[in-house]
Length: 144
View 1: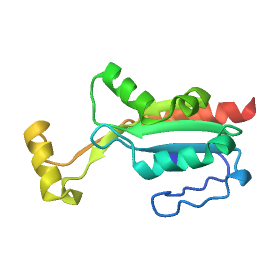
View 2 (view 1 turned 135 degrees about the vertical axis):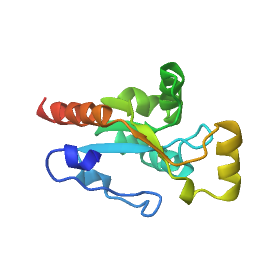
View 3 (view 1 turned 120 degrees about the horizontal axis):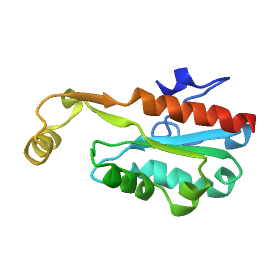
């Protein structure tokens, strides 16, 4: 959804599947992922740590997908998902909401979602307005 809202040539790379990238060829880098048991994916955290000096030379956008409804808590999740230095460096940060596909969860995950969160069916609550604002702010930063 985000890619369709960005201008210019946009490449999407899933670092979970392809962690080696030539970051030098990009001016803007958007890093994002889902929150799982309060944390972002380990591969994303490792990627940021391994590439931190180069990332700090780029315009960075950060996002998470998180199911928390409380704005204060979700803001804390966003901040704690990334290292302080990359969070402070980012030109735009947002929580896009979440999607939960119960068909993709294992037995234990379904059990936890059902008992702890009371979720029994798939939920699709991505916030298109938040994604729009995020994209507009990235585009605006490119013009400065």
